[in-house]
Every structure is written in structure tokens, then in C-alpha cells.
Length: 152
Image (cartoon, rainbow, N blue to C red; front, top):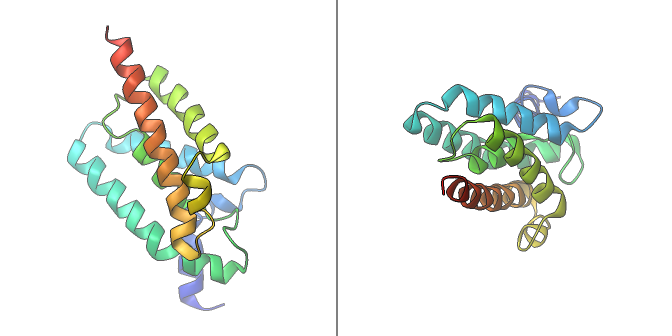
């Protein structure tokens, strides 16, 4: 195996989390929540971390997919990490929002509402990343509404 293939798979699998035998996407989402927790109190750090993860996802998920030899392989979970980070942007890190948002994101990621399902069909990194970023945007919108309703 080439070193660049190893590096792509290592980071795209979120340090190997994607190779867990059951529900790797869910574990990738949990890893994303951990990252959200680490940067939750610093908006600038949050945005920088989110941009770094998204950029790494676009740079590495396509090469990881080629190295694995399977379209949108289950072991690639950097897309879930990215999506979760988008989900919680500008949302208070409170247990009620975290739990609700986590389940909304997993539902959105599974159902792939338009245009996520169509975008997933694109080749390489674009197809891998965009459906989860759309799921993250939809989740964030739901959480923003819930946040506003909770403050009434």
C-alpha cells in the first residue's frame, strides 16, 4: 500500500473509527460531536476547525475511496464529522440540542432529502461530502427553529 493511500484512508476514516464493524457513520458522527465539544466555546476556533475538516474531507475522501476500491465506502466517515460540525454551528452545546440534533442529523443523513440524494451520486469526494453537508445544513435549520421556539 502506498503511503498516500494509507494517509487518505487514515484521516478519511477519522483515525480508524470508520473501520468499526457496526454503524461506522454513527460513530463518525459521535467523533464529530467530540470535536464540536472541544471547540464549543470559541466561535472562531469552531469555524476554523469546521473549515479544516470540510477541506480535508474534500481532499481525502476521493483518494480514500479509490484506495478502498468501493464507492462511498462505509469506512469513510470524515463526511459525517463535517456534517455534524455544520449541524451545530451557532447552536448552544446543551444536552437537549445535542441529543435532538444528533438524531436529526442521522435521520437526514439516512433519508437524504433533496438535493442530498442526487448529490451523493456524484463521483469522488464531491459525492461523498455533499450529501452529509446538506444533511448538516438541514439539521442546523431545524435546530435554529427549535432554538427560537424554545426561547419564546
